[in-house]
Image (cartoon, rainbow, N blue to C red):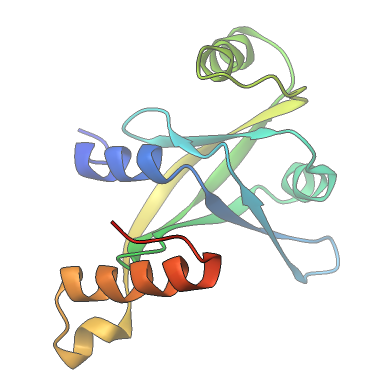
Length: 154
Protein backbone atom coordinates (compact mmCIF):
# COMPACT_ATOMS: atom_id res chain seq x y z
CA UNK A 1 0.00 0.00 0.00
CA UNK A 2 1.33 3.44 -0.93
CA UNK A 3 1.28 6.74 0.89
CA UNK A 4 -2.02 7.83 -0.67
CA UNK A 5 -4.79 5.87 1.04
CA UNK A 6 -8.12 5.23 -0.64
CA UNK A 7 -9.67 7.95 1.55
CA UNK A 8 -7.04 10.50 0.47
CA UNK A 9 -7.37 9.55 -3.21
CA UNK A 10 -11.17 9.90 -3.07
CA UNK A 11 -10.83 13.29 -1.39
CA UNK A 12 -8.37 14.63 -3.99
CA UNK A 13 -10.39 13.29 -6.91
CA UNK A 14 -13.59 14.83 -5.54
CA UNK A 15 -12.02 18.26 -4.94
CA UNK A 16 -9.95 18.43 -8.18
CA UNK A 17 -8.56 21.90 -7.37
CA UNK A 18 -5.01 21.79 -6.10
CA UNK A 19 -2.79 24.72 -5.23
CA UNK A 20 0.63 23.95 -6.61
CA UNK A 21 3.72 25.49 -5.01
CA UNK A 22 7.02 25.46 -6.90
CA UNK A 23 10.32 27.30 -6.52
CA UNK A 24 11.34 29.98 -9.06
CA UNK A 25 14.97 30.09 -10.27
CA UNK A 26 15.57 33.12 -8.02
CA UNK A 27 14.40 31.12 -4.98
CA UNK A 28 11.03 32.84 -4.58
CA UNK A 29 7.83 30.80 -4.33
CA UNK A 30 5.32 30.36 -7.13
CA UNK A 31 1.74 29.31 -6.33
CA UNK A 32 -0.67 28.29 -9.05
CA UNK A 33 -4.13 26.68 -8.87
CA UNK A 34 -4.72 23.60 -11.02
CA UNK A 35 -8.27 22.36 -11.56
CA UNK A 36 -7.00 19.11 -13.04
CA UNK A 37 -5.41 17.73 -9.87
CA UNK A 38 -6.07 14.00 -9.39
CA UNK A 39 -4.67 11.13 -7.37
CA UNK A 40 -3.38 8.82 -10.08
CA UNK A 41 -2.42 5.87 -7.89
CA UNK A 42 -1.20 5.10 -4.37
CA UNK A 43 1.96 7.18 -4.75
CA UNK A 44 1.32 9.85 -7.41
CA UNK A 45 -0.75 12.97 -7.89
CA UNK A 46 -0.96 14.33 -11.41
CA UNK A 47 -2.13 17.54 -13.03
CA UNK A 48 -2.29 18.91 -16.55
CA UNK A 49 -0.41 21.88 -17.90
CA UNK A 50 -3.10 23.79 -19.77
CA UNK A 51 -1.50 27.19 -19.35
CA UNK A 52 1.26 26.94 -16.75
CA UNK A 53 4.56 28.05 -18.28
CA UNK A 54 5.94 29.31 -14.95
CA UNK A 55 5.10 26.11 -13.11
CA UNK A 56 6.66 23.93 -15.81
CA UNK A 57 9.80 26.08 -16.09
CA UNK A 58 10.24 25.95 -12.32
CA UNK A 59 9.78 22.18 -12.15
CA UNK A 60 12.25 21.56 -14.96
CA UNK A 61 14.96 23.34 -12.96
CA UNK A 62 13.84 22.26 -9.46
CA UNK A 63 11.36 19.36 -9.20
CA UNK A 64 10.50 20.00 -5.52
CA UNK A 65 6.78 20.62 -5.17
CA UNK A 66 3.98 20.96 -2.65
CA UNK A 67 0.30 20.54 -3.45
CA UNK A 68 -2.51 21.67 -1.15
CA UNK A 69 -6.02 20.35 -1.67
CA UNK A 70 -8.71 21.71 0.68
CA UNK A 71 -12.47 21.33 0.88
CA UNK A 72 -13.67 24.95 1.05
CA UNK A 73 -16.72 24.02 3.11
CA UNK A 74 -15.28 21.66 5.75
CA UNK A 75 -11.95 23.51 5.83
CA UNK A 76 -10.10 20.21 5.87
CA UNK A 77 -7.61 18.83 3.41
CA UNK A 78 -4.07 17.67 2.75
CA UNK A 79 -0.60 18.98 1.94
CA UNK A 80 1.45 16.75 -0.33
CA UNK A 81 5.21 17.13 -0.64
CA UNK A 82 7.15 15.35 -3.33
CA UNK A 83 9.20 15.38 -6.48
CA UNK A 84 7.65 16.18 -9.86
CA UNK A 85 8.36 14.74 -13.29
CA UNK A 86 7.17 16.61 -16.38
CA UNK A 87 5.94 14.55 -19.35
CA UNK A 88 5.31 15.96 -22.82
CA UNK A 89 5.00 12.67 -24.74
CA UNK A 90 5.10 8.92 -24.30
CA UNK A 91 2.85 6.19 -22.99
CA UNK A 92 2.20 7.73 -19.56
CA UNK A 93 1.48 11.15 -21.11
CA UNK A 94 -1.01 9.55 -23.55
CA UNK A 95 -2.66 7.53 -20.77
CA UNK A 96 -3.27 10.59 -18.58
CA UNK A 97 -4.45 12.66 -21.56
CA UNK A 98 -6.95 9.89 -22.38
CA UNK A 99 -8.23 10.05 -18.78
CA UNK A 100 -8.84 13.81 -19.05
CA UNK A 101 -10.55 13.39 -22.44
CA UNK A 102 -12.94 10.76 -21.04
CA UNK A 103 -13.62 13.17 -18.15
CA UNK A 104 -14.64 15.81 -20.74
CA UNK A 105 -11.59 18.05 -21.07
CA UNK A 106 -11.30 19.75 -24.43
CA UNK A 107 -8.28 21.88 -23.49
CA UNK A 108 -4.96 21.65 -25.22
CA UNK A 109 -2.73 19.92 -22.68
CA UNK A 110 0.96 20.67 -23.15
CA UNK A 111 2.43 18.63 -20.32
CA UNK A 112 1.41 16.19 -17.63
CA UNK A 113 3.07 16.60 -14.25
CA UNK A 114 3.34 13.51 -12.07
CA UNK A 115 4.28 14.03 -8.44
CA UNK A 116 5.82 11.18 -6.49
CA UNK A 117 4.38 12.01 -3.07
CA UNK A 118 6.87 11.57 -0.21
CA UNK A 119 4.90 13.17 2.64
CA UNK A 120 1.26 13.84 3.42
CA UNK A 121 0.09 16.23 6.14
CA UNK A 122 -3.53 16.78 7.12
CA UNK A 123 -4.85 20.33 7.05
CA UNK A 124 -7.56 21.28 9.55
CA UNK A 125 -8.96 24.73 10.23
CA UNK A 126 -8.41 26.29 13.65
CA UNK A 127 -12.22 26.60 13.77
CA UNK A 128 -12.25 23.01 15.02
CA UNK A 129 -10.09 24.08 17.98
CA UNK A 130 -13.06 26.11 19.24
CA UNK A 131 -15.18 22.97 19.50
CA UNK A 132 -17.16 23.37 16.29
CA UNK A 133 -18.21 20.15 14.57
CA UNK A 134 -17.51 19.48 10.90
CA UNK A 135 -21.21 19.99 10.18
CA UNK A 136 -21.16 23.39 11.94
CA UNK A 137 -18.09 24.51 10.00
CA UNK A 138 -19.64 23.28 6.76
CA UNK A 139 -22.92 25.08 7.51
CA UNK A 140 -21.06 28.31 8.29
CA UNK A 141 -19.30 28.26 4.90
CA UNK A 142 -22.36 27.04 2.99
CA UNK A 143 -24.29 30.01 4.39
CA UNK A 144 -21.44 32.38 3.60
CA UNK A 145 -21.21 31.27 -0.05
CA UNK A 146 -24.99 31.18 -0.49
CA UNK A 147 -25.23 34.78 0.74
CA UNK A 148 -22.17 35.89 -1.23
CA UNK A 149 -23.44 34.37 -4.46
CA UNK A 150 -27.06 35.19 -3.62
CA UNK A 151 -28.08 31.60 -4.22
CA UNK A 152 -31.06 30.35 -2.25
CA UNK A 153 -30.20 27.57 0.23
CA UNK A 154 -32.15 24.33 0.08
